[in-house]
Image 1 (cartoon, rainbow, N blue to C red):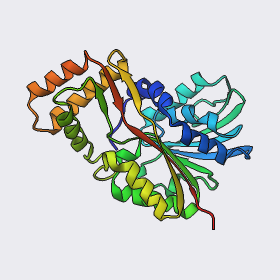
Image 2 (tube, one colour; image 1 turned 180 degrees about the vertical axis):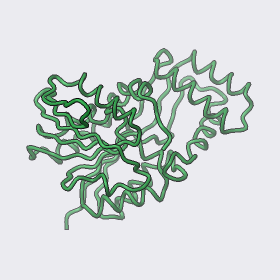
Image 3 (cartoon, rainbow, N blue to C red; image 1 turned 45 degrees about the vertical axis):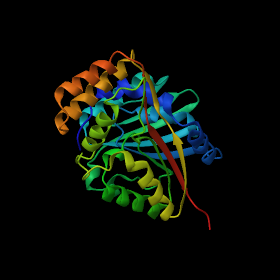
Image 4 (cartoon, rainbow, N blue to C red; image 1 turned 120 degrees about the horizontal axis):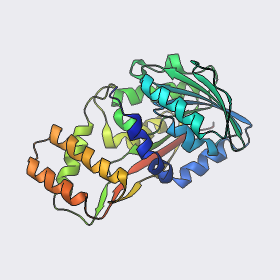
Length: 283
């Protein structure tokens, strides 16, 4: 899988947490409200942002199995979680397990290095109540999502996938080249990221439909980033956006540079994401 740097993941974390869809978050909380404990499988965990953005929705005693292919990201996740916790009960040197206290919650963490492109069977704990993957499915192929859906349905487990990029970007004020730049970026997103040709902005719709066919009740919610031109994240995003278009399209470099200069100086950028939560239908 194509990697992401810890610096980028930490830069986007505040925007990710602020963007979470309230209706979906409420449904996750309601689903597990009667429980005293929960076991979570977090796929493509990166630097641990999904745990930090989700733990408050879940019961007081949590066990997280956090999976990523990149050892650098797993090391960053361990370091960041230790810094984030109110208290660290156990963090043995060289060990990939942690026990943390955050507010009223006790969180056991198990960091697992695995290549999810080869399947997820080997990383699923014997008991799992919730499978989650944040900002991940738009990187995956149709076939991988089909296999993921089949693995979820086999277990009848709930699934929560926040922050799937959906392509519904809005710029204010608009620029004449916004449409062409966005279309070129979406085309570039379809490159193989290690899971086959990526499905990109259609991922939330495709995944939701697959879950419904597998017998799940599916709830969607909008979770856009709301960025101002002065935000460090907006600057980094615009620059990365332009680099991707330069590498993967036939748009003239002068057009790309003109668009980038404008975006770095003007207005706001709404970056579209969708949160998905689904549970098995009864009966």
